Image: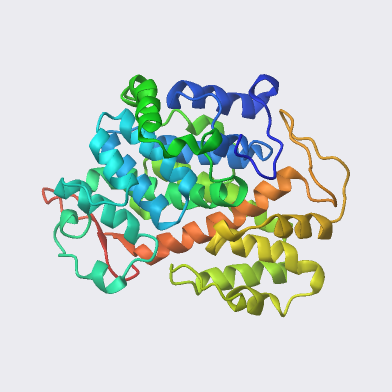
Length: 382
């Protein structure tokens, strides 16, 4: 198993909401044990909201599953998440496009122009160029984005889902999707894809995951998916992830959010000043949690055992926390597994929200009756 820091709720022991998520995940994704969801299981709201966002954007809907897997791969490559790259190369095999899967996995450019454009767009969402996005022609979405307006919630939602999921995977999992790095074998990826093909190619009804997150307090849906299952799922993810900010002091929370708000989407330099300078003004006791949240937001692949141990040691013990379906604290100190997942989710959702803002997605005002429906476009803030 690829888990680094969390003791998951095992499927056979899950109850309540965790058991419901596991059951739907197994039925709709075709895999009963997915490491990235197992590692989130101690924090049931984060688990449910992440699953809802993934299901409603990537799995359900009318847009091409192959196209959305290309987007998932493009974002995962840009975010340097080898675990997710291997997983979604395998799932792209499951759609039946084996050459496309291996071309992208090897760092190549798809021969199909539309797939190449989708891949380039997905990669660019990590650090989008405002100037390039603003050059879109004003009358039609395809001039600026490589998908029709009606499918924008699914494609944009898939991209943002993986900006969140990549960060959780990079921070809390190893790089190995399979034992012995078997996921690096084309034959293994192809065989895995064939095993999942029937489930991947089966159409799913949109919205079926939303009852799992109906209890979450949510704000407004994002403009690019308002009134759709993807919009409701994104609002739930934002709420579940944002709630982890309560684990930080107000000053530490402000430091993390200010640093993310100033981020341009690029990978931080190897020099540690980008991390140490914002934390310097905080009391010593607040730094481990703020450091961990900021690492997850901007460079999750640099989270180390020492970072997690320092956070656990600095967190006051409150007794063994056991959530619904299981899930307890691990390591020394007071930091539980649930709190670790929630803290990482806070950093991940802060970065995902920043990415959404950098994309400058806006919806035009409604046009008079008889005119074409308003379309999603890119440009300056509304």
